[in-house]
Length: 110
Length: 117
Image 1 (cartoon, rainbow over the protein chains, first blue to last red):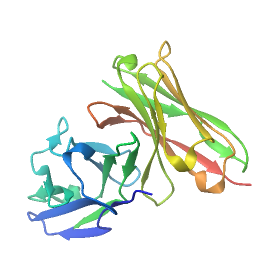
Image 2 (cartoon, helix red, strand yellow):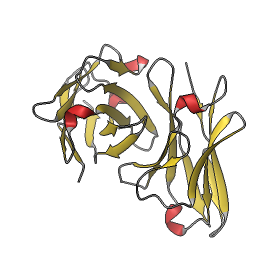
Image 3 (cartoon, rainbow over the protein chains, first blue to last red):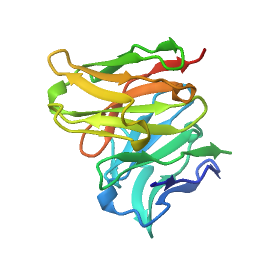
Image 4 (cartoon, rainbow over the protein chains, first blue to last red):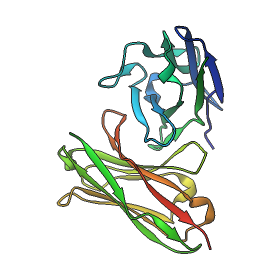
């Protein structure tokens, strides 16, 4: 069974930089997994941030960027702001056609 | 403006069934893949299923195959999820999301399904 891994929680100072990662329990994440990242504030629906590893969705500030770092996909927030404090989920498409979400990362800005 | 509005959730006893709906507007529905994603209370997101534009191709998370069925009515711009043999652990908010370019680019606000006796 494929497991997508994310850090459970990370913290960043206002104005600082934080990198969230998205890995696989077995193997490496590549661009062929079409990693996307979604942001969710409490009680709200998720919102698309990044897709196809590194393309920002419409209206997403350029302080959010996506990449492949080593064997994982990554989401970097540069110049963190208070309203970036929420949950972030990555999702990967598997070769079988199914999608698998990571467990999510709770980002705290303090 | 793209809108996705889910409905059909509610309280159901274990073993029961429900049909969830997702009414789409603001885009040409029959041109897009559509997805269902769920989120148990206090937990993370779980992708459930998706379906291609004409309904000829469907994928499901392995753990739910056989109990959940995705379908769509392009004439009504509506996506459905038939959920049956419900278990307590199926309690969740069920979201529909549009699929485009390997992304879930728009999400609805979700409908809550509570499975309890």
